[in-house]
Amino acid sequence: MLSRQSLVLQSRFRTYKCKKEEFIVEPKQQVFEDTQLDEVDKVEASEDLIRPIKVGQSSSLRVGQQCLAIGNPFGFDHTLTVGVISGLNRDIFSQTGVTIGGGVQTDAAINPGNSGGPLLDSKGKLIGINTAIFTQTGTSAGVGFAIPSSTVTKIVPQLIQFGKVARAGLNVEIAPDLVANQLNVRNGALILLVPGNSLAAKAGLQPTTRGFAGNIILGDIIVAVDNKSVKNKAELYKVWDDYNVGDKVVLKILRGSEYVELPIVLEEKSL
Image (cartoon, rainbow, N blue to C red; front, side):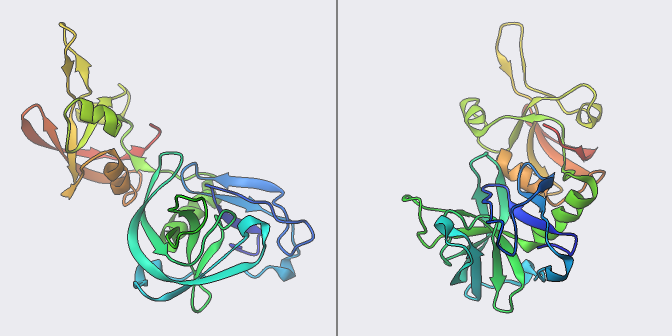
């Protein structure tokens, strides 16, 4: 529970409905949604019963410290499991193809039905939102992941105020890894398409094209942003998470056989 305004944060990867007779009732309205990470639902509950959760600092987490996961695995509601923080800054790969950086890894048992539940520290403060597990059986193998509270506190105010998250980036189409590999691009993010009305086009970024003979002419390849190396499309998208719309960055690009540094202003990413 986020606030006394009856707003509940859930992971977007899987949402389970609660029974109406329970304290937290079935969401009546999905008010805001981030297509990549979370959604905020509004529920009907008496205000005097609502006790918003306290949010901890995921940036201060240490491997080995105790944590607790709460969820509804296999329909067994109010289930609490205990474990430790197993790793930090993990990449979480979702079924939608989105890569979430900074993930918290835990061995606290997380099963289907735990997604969207809180990951707490030993003081009961929110340090993450349970999101995914690594498993070959569909059940917990002791490798679970949570979206860190630092990410939650960044996106939730935007969801509440604007109904969406304005993600900074370039409105260009980046080649999927498979396509990049087929074109022998082993390092960097290859630009396929640059819309004519985008800031990227005005800054001079060049797309991939075909020559008169039908040969492919590679577009610009982004290899670094503000000296942060970029090895592929996923890493570029992770870098964008550190910026806001309107920020000015310096791209290091490979154009043909030469490296070029190009200043550019980030806009709201739609591609």
